[in-house]
Amino acid sequence: MRFSLCRLLCLLLMTCSVQAADAADEGAQEAAVPALNMNQIGHAYVRLVLALGEHDPDTVDAYYGPTAVRDEVKRAALAPAQIEAEAQALLLQVDAAPQSQTQQELLSQRREYLKKQLAALVARAQIVQGEKFSFDDEARALYDTAAPYYIEADFAPVLARIEKLLPRQAGDAQRTLAARYNRYIERYAVPPAKLQAVMTLAINEARARAAKHLPLPTGERFELSLVKDKAWSAYNWYQGGLTSRIEVNTDLPIPVSRIIELASHEGYPGHHVYNTLLESGLVIGQQWPEYTVYALFSPQSLIAEGTADYGVGLAFLGKQRLAFTKELFTAAGLNPKDATRYLEIVNAARELVPAGIEAARRYLDGQVTAADTSQWMQRFLLYSPERAAQRLKFIDKYRAYIINYSWGEALVGNYIRANGGDVAGSPEQWQQFFQLISQPRTPAMLVADEPDVVIAGAAGADINDLADFEAFIATRPTLDAFAARYPDVLLVRPGMITTREFRSDRSRFFPKLDEQGRIIGGGFM
Image (cartoon, rainbow, N blue to C red; front, side, top):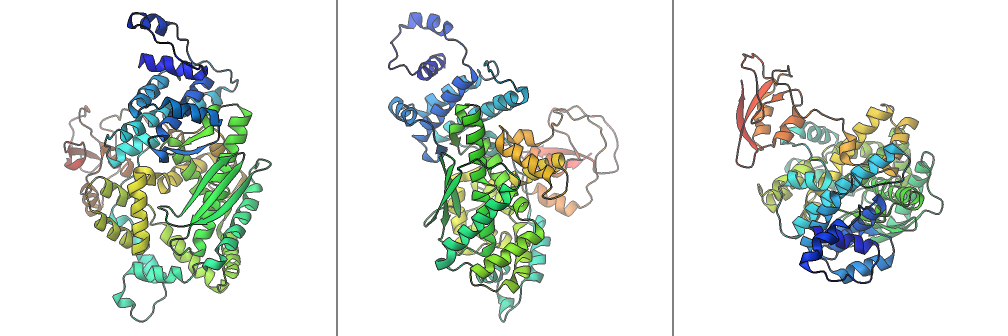
């Protein structure tokens, strides 16, 4: 690790070669290595991300720094184990690194961002070397958070509501709810011949709405392409120079509701705006090199995906969304009179999105098969078999990345409402949104600080629905998942000192754990 740190400094100084040193002289050479400043750490971080990208192409989502740096990284040909060691060494330098930035808050954010990004890079290098993580452990290691657990009962009310909303036809008694839903939704798919024009119309509308609230950099632009045979439905490939290439996958029918979501999520005020603001404000404005690379498997992705999903509702509020949906219906050759019920149904279905997290968790942790997962998604996400198959490809490829969407949106939404008020689309909410997408932020910054120690014997909320509670325990949740679902119940963790007392309620739970630390039983005592 000491030699790695020395080599990092050499790379930063762009030396053409490294002189060989005798083992006896190594200690003296290491002592002479000065502490890296923040920009040097930023440059080194970029090189390590690019180096891991040579082994794992999905690691580098975007890079728009000097091509000479990428060429140099290719020539260095670091092995994943070397990348892991150098990232660990670099991580140790962040807190002590000198920095000329005068804004203390921004400096603190930068340090925290780099520490979380480097820690995720270490974990991803370990994964590339073959190390296996559980779903939740991978989420924490790469994205600085873990999503809640969900059970079937969480989605039953929404499914019942959709059941009532869907128009009925002959033979529906023999059809599943998913089959009926997909038949209905695909009735409002945009014809392929009109897809490019309708998509462009939606992106331009999203841009106009975002521009009213956000300072879009002068010269920003996007390119739109329709593609096939992808594991995702759409992707924003940021090119640098304030330019994005937005690709939309046409393997499956694209309903009108998805048009608005993709236009906002991939474009405005989503990924395109996020990347252009970081480039203009932090790369160009602050001269911070670390933002010239976007490491996909990192905490940055939760901020990016969470704000992109939240931005859809921020840009297209209530009646405004309905009015524009009618406009898109007309542009697609559909009847705008159907838009009201259509939106009511698709908005209800959107509440099912967290079921995708549970599907991925159970599948990746080996609790269920791919076939079981497909059935789960058809039942609780109302996916068609084809859509479920596409989603399975996404999960196989990107694994715990799925938490960054609905869970990321939930964290972002809670943060914005806590700091910008509850009035949807207010200037205060837009201001909080702007700060999230233009400054160094980590997922941990979105949640209030919580004490590490819980005072034993503190009063908590009673659990009244025992059937629901037992169904939750049957999912073998982690301790953190229990605490997230029942925040007012005192969870007496192993080693915690508690008082001996009688309680007539269910406000204190003593879990029984398996060898992985998951809850498999327990009792209220």
